[in-house]
Image 1 (cartoon, rainbow, N blue to C red):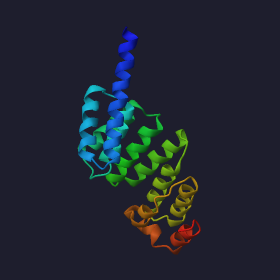
Image 2: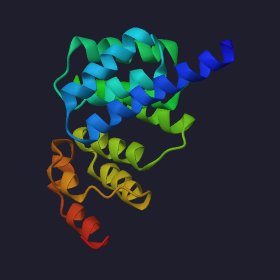
Image 3: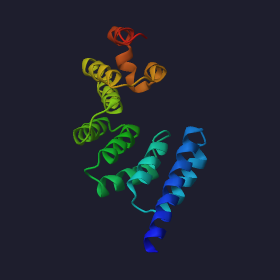
Image 4: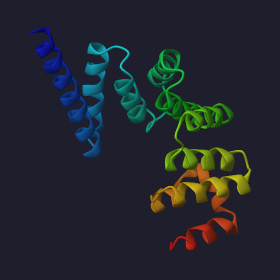
Length: 176
């Protein structure tokens, strides 16, 4: 019977995660955060809960809870790519661009590197004023499947890269 309870507990966990993800996808951020806060209390230290909280919290302003979860996830899971990557997003919000870039690079090393890693590196290099590297990473991101063209056109992290004529040429080379 203990195995049956474990399966029921696992099913309940993933159903709650699905509820939170559906709320996120539906733009119901407050509902998603509420579900994830409840999960955080009930499933302390679960990486999937932590990374989903980081995802939601990193879409707003920097705050102490975001910093605490990022720090905790790195302490608990220092060799997990997703912990490193979402901690990088927290560092971006705190304008710790060198730290953010180092965390994204570490995440990509553990990997595998994907379109989001390359996009984040493009942002980091643009913010640092290294336009050539930014555009190189942005090209890699597009080749790896990144297709949020509208966001590329408005993301303030890419403002320096967008000011360069090579940005428009890169997008044109991909049919944009």
